[in-house]
Length: 88
Picture (cartoon, one colour):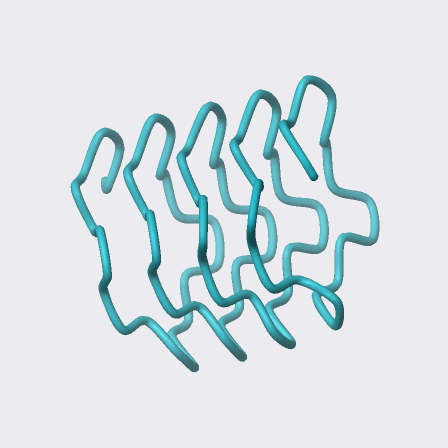
């Protein structure tokens, strides 16, 4: 369980985090490029300035997450919950 974890600046590229519990986690400036976060629980997580290129958020819960200033052009959000998420 990574809920409330401080992962600021962490290199999680290509990580497999399927079904992970990351609610309220701090992932500011973290590199999640190519990571698999299918069905992950990221409610209210702070992902500001993160690198989310080719990140798979399919069916993930990002309700209330902060996605401002992220690189997410190639991320997959198919079926993801994004209500209340902060975006640029």
